[in-house]
Image 1 (spheres, rainbow, N blue to C red):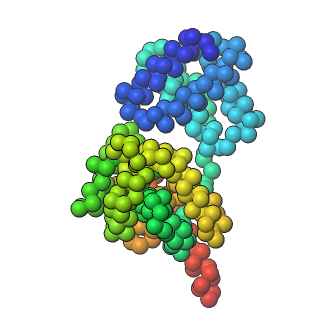
Image 2: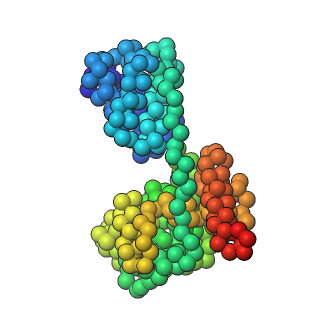
Length: 299
């Protein structure tokens, strides 16, 4: 990669870290998008950002479609590049933003998948048992469903972040933003049993304060949680695949289905914009429509 482009990328990364306070995962996505674009520029013989124009932007969009990227991926890459060139404009490293001429492709209108209550019961039954890993898995499942936290937020929980007396969790979210989320009695009991009985056995001789640990006693990773949930589904009669975000979707959908107001759900989820939470109102409306069509005599 051209040294000038590498320098520009590094300046942009510093901006995302210090001024935007983006998480390492978010920054990684930006870097990957930039590197993919820089490879394209290299093939086009472009060596500096000053040379990039709206024609290059359109050609890049054509390449993305030829490589059969999903609309959501194309949308994210365009957004990343717009932010990059906007940063260069601000720093007076170039005067225009070539990505502003590119139409932002709309994301596919997919509704988030969630579990029905009877499906959740199967998951909870799948992690019943007295073995330390069973106890840990139940605590993870209860907490994810009780709070709607992201899987990355779950892996960063420290023992001091859990208040079992007040049944609240301090969550460190995106952009280093913190929020307190309450949880109910089922999650409280599962976590208390895990912390008192299971975690010390799994921890062995290691000493750290991460709440959830793997079978080696090390802090549990996001990949580890995904593996745990996949194995739980395999021990049920459920046919759908699972990803941790489904529990977050389920948390929000069940709250709205049972009468929670949108602003409260927004705060619990840690959404910066209400529009992100409003997606779940479409889920609940779709659920109502299907129920109506299934049971009304003249539907």
